[in-house]
Image 1 (cartoon, one colour):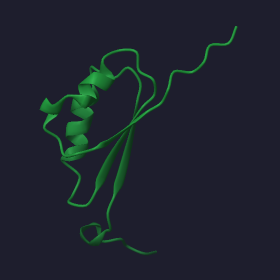
Image 2 (spheres, rainbow, N blue to C red):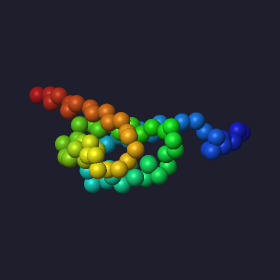
Image 3 (cartoon, helix red, strand yellow):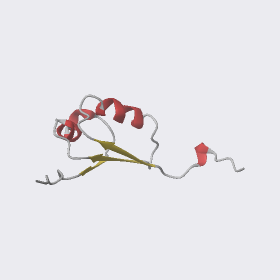
Image 4 (cartoon, rainbow, N blue to C red):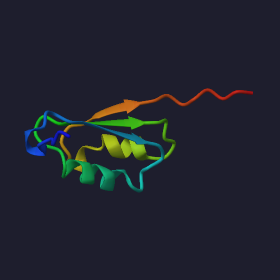
Length: 79
């Protein structure tokens, strides 16, 4: 078996998928931030939240490194 030296790892991409997570998203991002290193990226996929998750993510006051927000459109209702 091969042992991977985490100190020598390459860049990391972390993807967080969220739906109506305003109550927990800041804590989640904080936990991710504490683990990321220079060159790592954080991608957040908002799955058409109907609460204020998206506006919370877009707030400048969060204080996190830059992250990418992918917004999924609401699903079309079927009759």
